Length: 399
Image 1 (cartoon, rainbow, N blue to C red):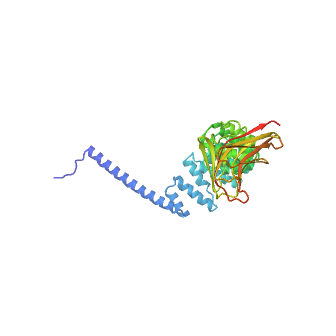
Image 2: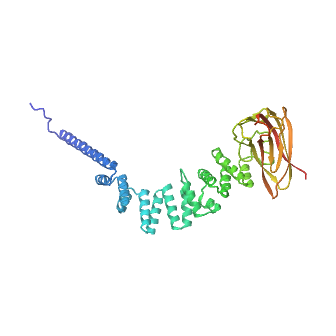
Image 3: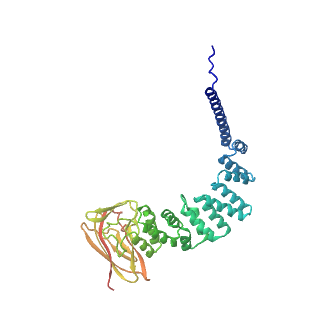
């Protein structure tokens, strides 16, 4: 008795389906082997192996891209491979960029521009825009350069230093770079502010800093503080003051923070507590004051703290303070300085007032530095003790 399935239409269909399935599995297995061989050749990375990988899988864009690079490196013509990549992926910007740069090298500037513009059309990210801006820079087409450098910065990320460098190569005018290249993006403005500070392009600091200050974002506090400090150190009082006010602080008049309390920013027109070996600063709250502790290991002469102040030319001022000391000899070696004026801080176990007279420098408006300094008195060892300060004021007085 035969156990073979009766030959019926239904059984025949099952046999056909089984055969098709087996054929599909066979094809899949063969394709898997093909993929594995091609991938092995590609990863070997020699020109011959990559060429073999392309032959096995001619529609694989990464293989075509690598092979095109190898052909270029060996001085060959990679254009057919790159054009094939574009045919496979009409949104491929990298192939268009490479074709554009190749055309530029060959002197076909019209073709280069066409390919690079096409890359920027299909891909609105950073690389096509930056490449176009660089192309127009090389061709001396400044109007097109500014258009595309700004477009590149609008979508930029990471280190933007090469972009800013190129802007300043095209124009040495801070106002032009700011107006034509820098977009509204806070991230870009912040990066640009760090850049101009590092390059010491002080004329470019204020516009970027004011733009960031208006945003009222704590994310940019560090660079804004650095900007104010750099402007003050460069004598740019008016610009630093604009930023200070834009940050929400009252316009500086006389001493900011007479008792060393708010804002305790340590930058701009606030007190800068200077880092000195052997010296410790302690900000006190009850009552508000500043304690400076010297270990006896401090330098024989050093500046302990400072604040920038704006004074009117030729006007007379009086600097007043209260201080008390512990451990300092009668000749403390501590003195306030502003311009050419000096005011010694005497030793006192209890709060004691002091003052010195100051005349503003010649000119329209002068930027002065109020500082507390230590100088070891002659015949004395370096002081080991502490001084506390409060009620420091600078007031204009009648002539």
